[in-house]
Length: 227
Image 1 (cartoon, one colour):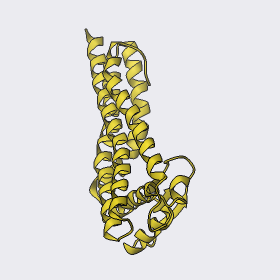
Image 2 (cartoon, one colour; image 1 turned 180 degrees about the vertical axis):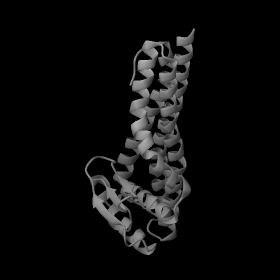
Image 3 (tube, rainbow, N blue to C red; image 1 turned 135 degrees about the horizontal axis):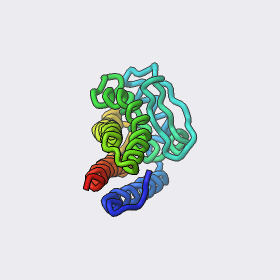
Image 4 (cartoon, rainbow, N blue to C red; image 1 turned 90 degrees about the vertical axis):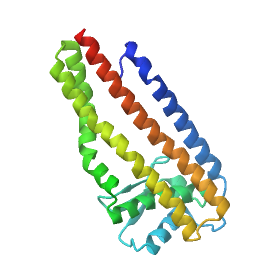
């Protein structure tokens, strides 16, 4: 939720970073989508092979609509791949598929940041919307307790954004390591995989930065209302 006030200038750097990250990830993905892997396996095939070799036979692989909507659902043990990844044998597709397998490996090992993130998802989802509503009511009615409650709830989203960083970075690290370790990509292809995943990671950095900047903005607005 946005409204114009002098503190809006605080989030401009976050907006610029988010815009750059979006362009970067799409540009990098599109570039490496044009480069086929020597092995010729599609993203879905690579994912199935990696999961098989790591003993994760209970994880399902399904197509999902939406560009770059790829994700792993730990609740249903399902790895969902977008059309650009599921049926493509490109360097980009293989990299993204391996990244999602990285999340499945994290789930298998009960990787602590992933467990924590899963636990706070409901709080972050509900709390974010409620945080803005409560804060705005408190701001316009000069009720500091409501503003403070809104800020407290928004901290749940901050926690989610920050804990997402190690989860995503670790999944990317695992993706490159497992692809190379299992001989599923050539050294030059691994460089392309790393480039795609590094670009994707920037979007999570931008989201975390925006969340922190928004928190600073809320604190400033509360303090300004007290003056």
